[in-house]
Length: 295
Image 1 (spheres, rainbow, N blue to C red):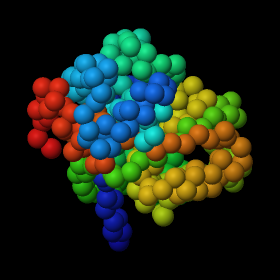
Image 2 (image 1 turned 45 degrees about the horizontal axis):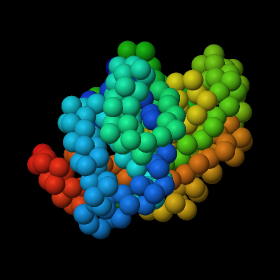
Image 3 (image 1 turned 30 degrees about the horizontal axis):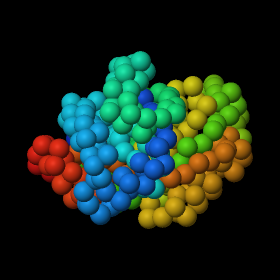
Image 4 (image 1 turned 180 degrees about the horizontal axis):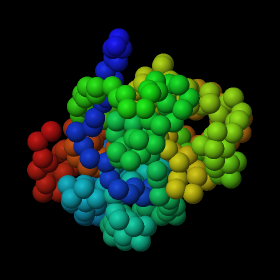
């Protein structure tokens, strides 16, 4: 009998386990305080006396949560007008409790918080094994990955990947037409015809040269109720972030809409801190009596 050689598949595997749950908090920063904080983190200058005490409390509180693994990623927009904090808490109420315990929230510097549970879909190498299987199944269904006859499995060659925070990150938060998206997903899973743009969306994100294999998608996925999409992009400019988001076939066809953007800087956990602010953050932490862990 002739044997057919099956080429091995390459698989990226993160060295950092992905949390079971992620809860997203977006909140505003009080404008006067935000302007002062921007100057402090950008230049490393000493904070004014009226902000000194609460800033030190805030840094101690946040560093502790980061080291305990309760923040997946947390930090302000680059203009310090809002925050994006992502918690690894087991439930929404616990995540709220952690947010509301922040001295900046207590003193009204952070306010008007808004929440949702986040279901990250890509990049596949970062996410939970069960979700990896779901996404790989989708990729095989639309022929991005090959399918095999029953009983035939390729060898898997794994490459370990250490996540490294890029120089710049841009956030896009979009509203999504949840019911329309859910129907398309049900139809696709049932083998019913779906519009070509829905398949093109999979190729746009996951196919060769797509936003995922090109490394543009730092983390992306819907809220658990699918009424919002949060995509964090590793690109060089806001213009590039807009281009990638608004050229996505689901955006072009109105399933993602009302896009909002901002540049984002991660401050906690320390090991994930954005390179732009890491040196000044380290100085501030030392002023607060904290010697950061070795990078």
